[in-house]
Image (cartoon, rainbow, N blue to C red; front, top):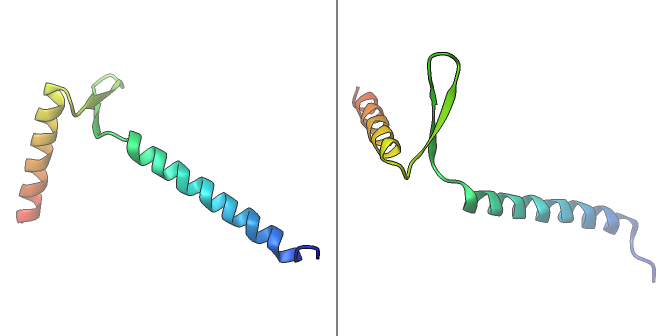
Length: 71
C-alpha cells in the first residue's frame, strides 16, 4: 500500500521542528552571560561574567535594576 500524500508533508514539517529543537538545546547549553560595554571611540568590549570586571559590572547592573524596580 503506498503512503498517503499528506504523510510526506507531515514528515518534512516534523523533521524541521526536530532540527529547530536540537538547535535551541545546543544554543542554550553554550550560552554564558556577558555584557557589552560601548567605549568612547566606537569600540565595543564583551565582558565575561567570570572575570573580576564582569562580576563588578553585573553587581552594579543588578543594583541599578533593583533601584529602578523600587520606584
